[in-house]
Image 1 (spheres, rainbow, N blue to C red):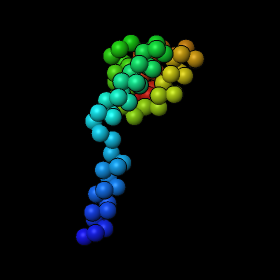
Image 2: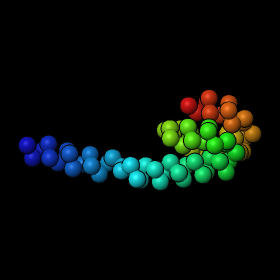
Image 3: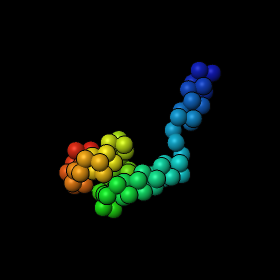
Image 4: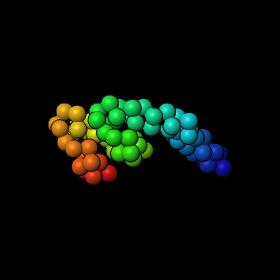
Length: 74
């Protein structure tokens, strides 16, 4: 029983709260829009597990079209 309680405590630490998740998604959204993504695509990517660095690199540095980049990333 003690082992189960320990596991539950560890899960609580690992899972981010909704508020923290919203802050991260907001920051990701800002970064993506600054890189050149239109709002609807930026929102989809921000809410996904896509690599933010790669998302910015392929559009802002390599000149990939944001729509194509979203298809690649998602």
